[in-house]
Length: 81
Image (tube, rainbow, N blue to C red; front, side):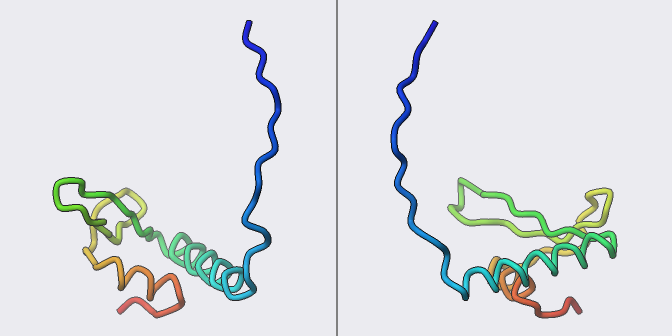
């Protein structure tokens, strides 16, 4: 049986107001996408050292591909076209 001694973990403190607002906006966008039967998926492409981003339907079928920058703009509230 292993016994682990508790240890103190330091946090970075409370998030900035801007970060909280951005998180709330992104959560709202995620809910809107989900309600519309859409989702944004992220995958790391290790051979190219980048992130692949796709817009998928509720069944996971890829509807379009986008840059990570576009995905961040959508998370910030930019509308899909």
